[in-house]
Amino acid sequence: MLAFTVVLLGATTSGVAWFSPSQAIGALSRDDEDVARCIHDDPKSVRAGLGIQAISTNPKLALIQIQSTCICGAQNCPFWVYRVDGNVAKKLIDGYAIDVDAKPKPSGWPDITALAHDSALVSDGTRFAFRDGGYVPVETWRVRGDTGEIKKTREIKFAPGKSSTRLSGAIGTDWGDVYTFTAKAGQHLTLSSAVPLGGIDVAIAFGEKAPRPVGLNAAVVLAASGTYVLTVDPVGADVADRRYVFTLSIR
Image (cartoon, rainbow, N blue to C red; front, side, top):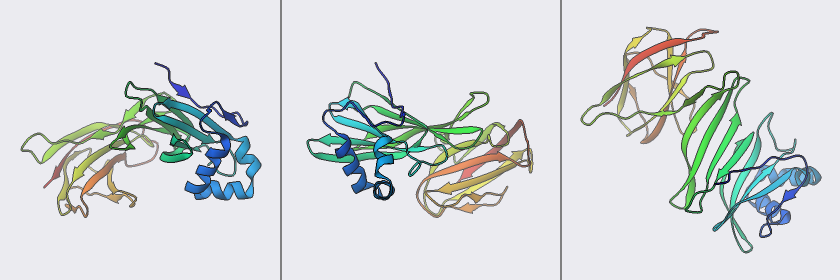
């Protein structure tokens, strides 16, 4: 199967008969305050940097990107996926990335893969799949720019009847490990039996809240039900490779 990649070269592009540049700009102006502001401030730049690609014809899905200094970050530019039914365009997903791919599937709803610049060393990848009427992230990973090494975000699962598990890996400066886990409000999270002792920083985050440090043998009460992100990073600067192991318990 073909995979579509949108690459913007500073000129308005649209091979989509059923979704014109004017329609796309109108939909974006309605749904995105930053685009509306840029269209007001610098409409020529938005038009010149607009790219539209059909990624599915049944249903009709259009992938839109804008490359313009008015709206792009230092490296990443915005992208959107819209479903188009006649004159009605509904936004399904949006984000910022340096590269976006759409991979068609037999069902007609392609997966969307976005690679975003995070730092001079690392780029963040996310794969979105269509679930229950919308696109949701189903896989995340990071890519090292110097070696091409890939680290996937790992989901923590407990064996039946167990409330703890051992986690291990190898980490370096700006190249830590990322886990996700699901918990309920009021549960207690505890770390124990860490090696090397004092050599790792562990933190958890929920939603848009700032990460919260987790100390060894100090229970943390989880305030909300849902999916948490746990990060493991080395203590100290210029750490090339540090192996770790510890026990995580949720009760």
